[in-house]
Every structure is written in structure tokens, then in C-alpha cells.
Length: 103
Ligand SMILES: [Zn+2]
Image 1 (cartoon, protein in one colour):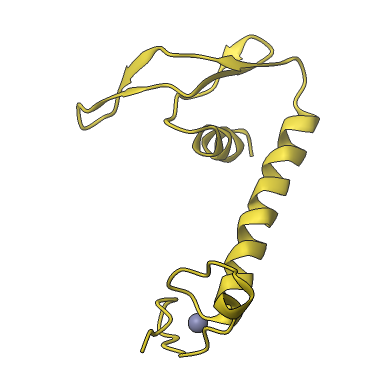
Image 2 (image 1 turned 120 degrees about the vertical axis):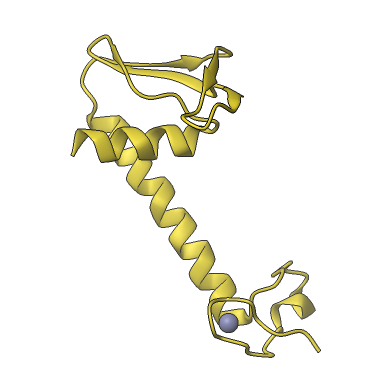
């Protein structure tokens, strides 16, 4: 029998699968909680983008190097007022980094 992997939950409630909802390794409650948190994070990113002044956001494929020396492809070019924000491997990560820096 499957147990929820959310922190120390361990619940066996996997009833959403009966309604063809793929809940993965999360119990009914934590599946919805994870969905809520992901949606909330997306909404915060969107609100941050909306209030940026003089925003530039476009596709980018430049190669960057992490502090540990690993190279990665930048997901998007993001700049405010002509100043580029730090590169990241996904749009979510890029906005999260920019948000932390601009607080
Ligand atoms: Zn759970």
C-alpha cells in the first residue's frame, strides 16, 4: 500500500486516483496543498512581472557558468530598465532570483 511522501505525513489516503487524478506520491490532502502552493507561487511571479517598470523578457539561449563551474543554458533574458537579472535554467527560477534581489 502506498504512503504519502509529504514531509512526515505517511497517510494512505489515495482516493483521487478513483477520479482519474494522477496524485503521484501525495495523499489526497497534500496533493491539493501542493497544487495550491504551486499556483500561489505562479501568481506571485505574475504579479511581480506586472509591476516591473521597463521590462524586457524574451527567449535566450546564451550559455552561463554556475559558481561550481557547471555550464547551463539561460532560459530567458529578463531585464528591468536595461539591467539584466541573473541567468537561470527556468523562467520560474529566473523570476524567483530576480524577486529576491529586488526586495
Ligand atoms: Zn499526505
